[in-house]
Figure 1 (cartoon, rainbow, N blue to C red):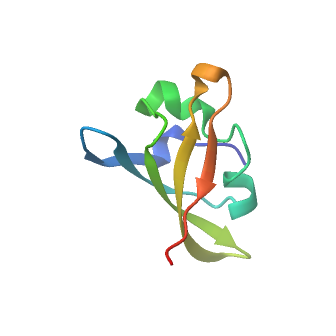
Figure 2: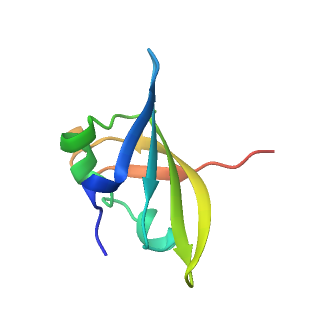
Length: 86
């Protein structure tokens, strides 16, 4: 599937970044693909440093992952990096 702008919601807006929630039936692999969130630049003003909490699917089981936008579409393609807590 492709990014669905109706499923992304901004839930916090700080001076340095925004936080979004996104729910999809797509897999983590699809969501983490470079360019997946390109349309979110227009629909949600997605910028470098923004955080996306995504609920994705793993064989039908919901899985939550957190991503940070590492490059925004001003360069042509949105890229994200999965965040981990140590």
